[in-house]
Image (cartoon, rainbow, N blue to C red):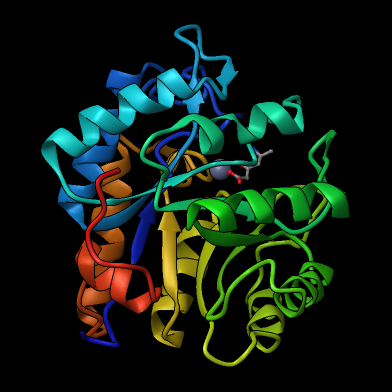
Length: 280
Ligand code: KMH
Ligand code: ZN
């Protein structure tokens, strides 16, 4: 395994951006799968997956996840990471539905480590919810990606690890630039980086214009990078991205200049201390 390899995660759609923000934002399982497959072919080894109804409203319907996963896995190998964040309007049971219902269980899922203001809303993650989610992951052997929106969430990671609810080595995603949470500055990235438990892996998801800047910094720092329409729909100021693959390709080009080879899905599994090969 090449310890220097770069894991690119693509998040082709979240719960918030709409086709009115960028017409290329995918809604249906077929649209999401097509964006994901092109992103994998451009270098992504993890796909962070949300689902939508056909009208674009956020969905945690396991059948819609299953259909997107089926279409993706028919074409490419990739680590599927289910979102358990869903939308701010989703109940905890709705957020857990794909984790509970998908068979086989997904290899990875996101786990947000605290409540945080989220634009005009609140993204609700009290301690009992986090622990319930972590237990459900443990039971099914799902690797959590720890979503960090605020500094105190790093302390929660250590507390959960101590309680045996998440297994080391831990994998973090620093989500920087959500309005109301930690902003997307290099200083904030450094601050979180300084708190990483030994042996952890990490990626950064900069929101909006922070995506490219923080992604480039992460490549230089030995971290990993997430890009995609969930976080950013622009290629540059005033110019919409044409696809998720376009955003992945740019990160892959920057990585090549900085001598970070792109991790294959199996290399990503090894870097994240996950079992090789999965059926999901
Ligand atoms: N849509 C946000 C409220 C995750 O995927 O785990 C939460 C989110 C995080 O997107
Ligand atoms: Zn997400």
